[in-house]
Length: 58
Image (tube, rainbow, N blue to C red; front, side, top):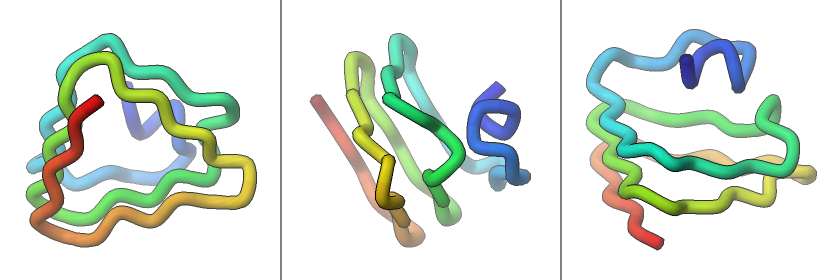
């Protein structure tokens, strides 16, 4: 589902716990072994790049 939101293929190692919010979606790039905890909001109008091995919480 995250690949549909961003418009690019996302590595299978992405672990995202819903709910997730974004204002646009197509400007998010995610590396390998990324964890995004519940209730995170990304404001990505100018782009967000998340490197490998990153943990994100609200």
